[in-house]
Image (cartoon, one colour):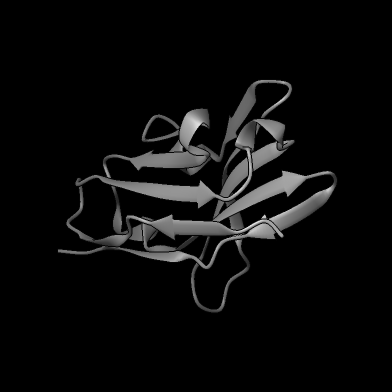
Length: 116
């Protein structure tokens, strides 16, 4: 069973930064994709950034391009999401997802709130 544990969420002012972490109990290098999603109450979960491990391709949702960056520490089986220039509309619960052998696994989510 793959387990993902997210951390790093919190309250930040507009223009501020946060770095989210997602620690896996399995080698990330053997995944097919590592992704970050976010969800606000009453809306569908939306993709923020997807990194396709084998292909080495990363896709960012348009609204976060140039502000968010995904990175991976394979030695620590941890994925990071660096979020800069945060806006109130970035407020959401952020979820990490890992895909192994055609199956997706989710973390528990971490709340990010951007407000003055």
